[in-house]
Length: 188
Image (cartoon, rainbow, N blue to C red; front, side):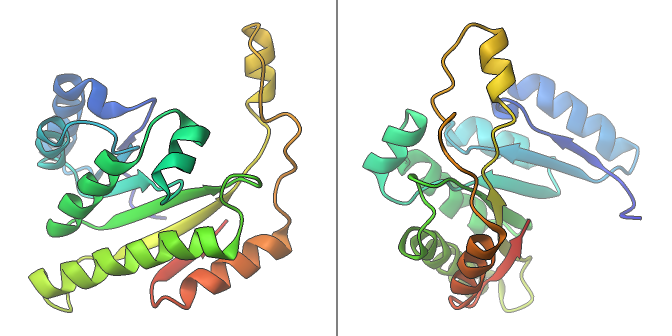
C-alpha cells in the first residue's frame, strides 16, 4: 500500500558507507524510495555522503542527557545531536525514533526533553526552508525483551531481563505529553 522502498538499517549502515551508497544509488536508478535508519553517532562526512542518496532518515534519539545516554548505550550523545541538527538543515523527512525504556527514559520529563529537541529542529528547518519544509516527527517505541534469547544463545548476560515493558497507558500518556510540544508524535 505504501508503494514500497528500501530501508538500510543495521547495526549502522553508515559504518559501511560505500556499500550503503551503492545499494541506495541502484535503488534510485530503479525509482525505488530509499531510507536509512541510523543512530547518528558517526562522522558527518560519512553520514552526509550517504544522505545524498536517501529520501527519508530515521534516527534514534534515546536520551537528551549525555551522561545518562552514555550509561544506557555506551556512548555520549553530543555527536548524534550535532548530526541531527545538520540533517534538519536538509529538506529530507526525518522520523526520530525513541525506544521507551523504563529506568532509562520512560518519564514525561525525559520524553519531554526529546520532544523539545525535535521541536527545536522543526523550527530551525522551517526558518531555513519555510513552512512547507519536509516533516520532522517523533515515534515512540515501547521497550520489549525480544533480544533476551539472542543474548542467551551467545552466552552473554542480558542486562535488561528484569525491565518490564511500559504499559499501553504509559505509552499513550508519554505520546500525549510529547505532542504538547507542537510536533507530530506516533505511538506504537
